[in-house]
Length: 220
Image 1 (tube, one colour):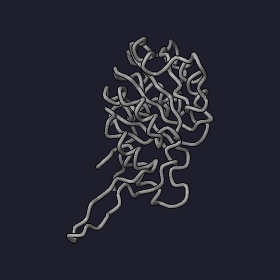
Image 2 (cartoon, helix red, strand yellow; image 1 turned 30 degrees about the vertical axis):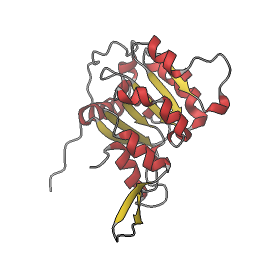
Image 3 (tube, helix red, strand yellow; image 1 turned 60 degrees about the vertical axis):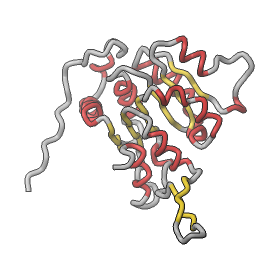
Image 4 (cartoon, one colour; image 1 turned 180 degrees about the horizontal axis):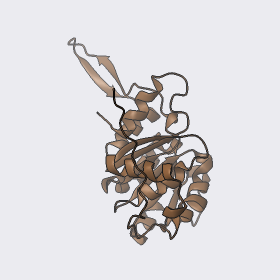
């Protein structure tokens, strides 16, 4: 059977005002091709080896459309995303949404940041997905339907998002679970488009993919 032709890598730099000068030309052809696919499909999983430049691809993808952005990543690399990666590739001021225990008096809060900038770009840790207080903070951002990046998407493993609870009349009620994967799926539904990054999408078993794919194309 004939195989599909690979997506050609665009050579001309896209017209993106927030893309830093020279960035597009510095990308490898496979990065440009991956960005083109992700932009075209809007909901996309980028599975590539460590060190292949997935973060750079995600940054370009974030500014390919107008509107706010939300990056969910491991707590240990929030600072790297916000202080190294984002400023290197795009001209957008990010905001690190830290856990409550890491905040200091006098820090700018998310609400003040969103009032100050024209394109909010929030970077938060995976722990915030399961934290009701953090979810409450990002509610105004979610109302704007941000572009959403799931970094290290293999964190999501559980395919169960609801549980059935028997009723006295013999029927069942379906209760949403309070898990990271379940909340990620709900957050994903609030986004305008979604991009998942991972070097190890199948960490233990093929069933690991279900939660990841559901966070990229929820309900599909």
